[in-house]
Image (cartoon, rainbow, N blue to C red; front, side, top):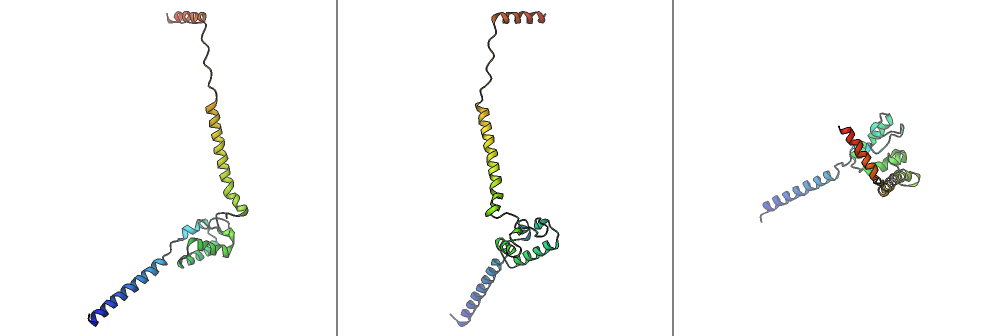
Length: 155
């Protein structure tokens, strides 16, 4: 193999390698998180509303921080962790799964379970309720009198 061919092959291989590395590094840093996705899960620390609904200067500052973290290719969880570190746990819109906040997750589940159980018990009782008894047969003299009355009105 000639030196010229070998150099051309090495140059082509180097170009492919550099292109692949650049493509992988660009793909690795493509942000997968977006601002609306994070805004729906964090609060404005001043007005106590969702960040997506707030127009306060504090909310604008939080949005700027989130945009900066997105540009650094941070994940949603990393962004939330940074917000909690900077603003405290009240910045999260969902309660934590610890301590008193755990009741915010348990109580609705218990209420739904109790309502469903109550509906089930009520349906069971209604299905087991005795049916109304059939009326007793008429006395033959009453049947004859009824027939006579009906015939009188048919004329």
